[in-house]
Length: 189
Image 1 (cartoon, rainbow, N blue to C red):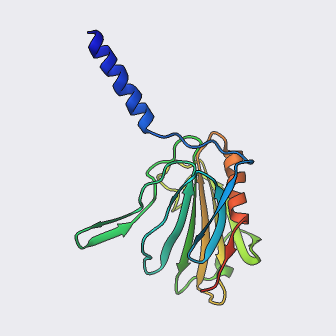
Image 2 (spheres, rainbow, N blue to C red; image 1 turned 60 degrees about the vertical axis):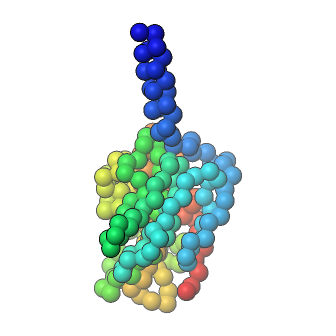
Image 3 (cartoon, rainbow, N blue to C red; image 1 turned 30 degrees about the vertical axis):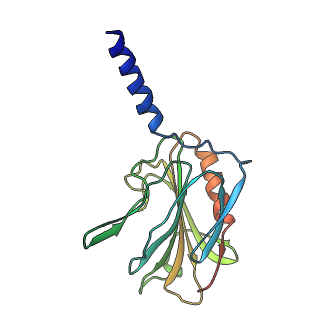
């Protein structure tokens, strides 16, 4: 019986240790820069990174960072391949930030909702809300930020920044997301 209890306790410890908790968000954490396609930004050191390995016709997640462990977002099986979210569910205290390069023939910056702002000197519009958005749906997000950013010289291509947040600690998560957003630099190409 004693052996069974030790085995059970050992399995519980291994099971608990295998699920990494999100890294605590700190405004004083050191940062590292990451350049992904046409965007460069600073992220907290030690955060997990992921990106789509190939673009789709109209949308491309060029970078994702999180204080939660991310998985490979793309798969290939025989002749079938695809890409999706880099995690299934946000753990409590987690923040997921995604950078997208998008292009849609009928897209127009003027028709986008949100409050005006600038990011690296480019016109942008920010929306900040609760509940799910298309990108944050199903992740268990309590709050989200979505920013569309003009991508000159074309009028139908744009960058998008999406932050999905799950409490506790939403104020710190939002501050971390906005710090990542404001660190961005964009390159033409």
